[in-house]
Image (cartoon, rainbow, N blue to C red):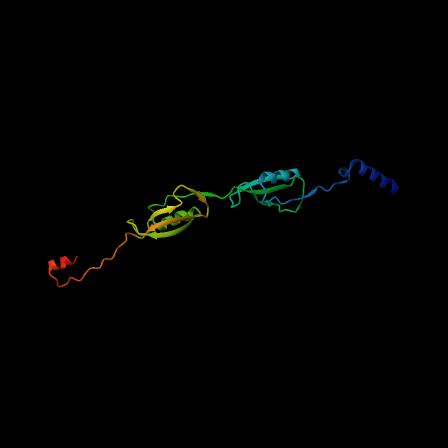
Length: 178
């Protein structure tokens, strides 16, 4: 009796394959981090996974996979959902026009935009601590966390002049000294 059952099972297995007897439908998830998003999506879909794409600003090149969930090397069933995060490239910020602003206002403005500031000081007729120039210039697009160089006024340069001692001199004699 056991021989007949065994032969029947062997016949079914050889005739219809693993589909009838039960198959191993888990797949090891490959790493797609660092790949172009199109290539990663194609690879995962060919393996039988469903792909969900999320985009995020990142320092990486635009279109490159920067993360995946679940992580690589996990064994998953076909049709499992794989979430890949794709870089949108670095976030670009438009540089504001800072000319004429106080240094404190310029610092607040740049910090609110996610930009850094480097301050140089120079003599100028503008009031002290007023922005007189900037690099990059207003309306240029730069990466978030980049640095904007500003030059602020120290105020007008006051030049010291040596004044001769004219105390006790007659007016005309003192005038001739200058």
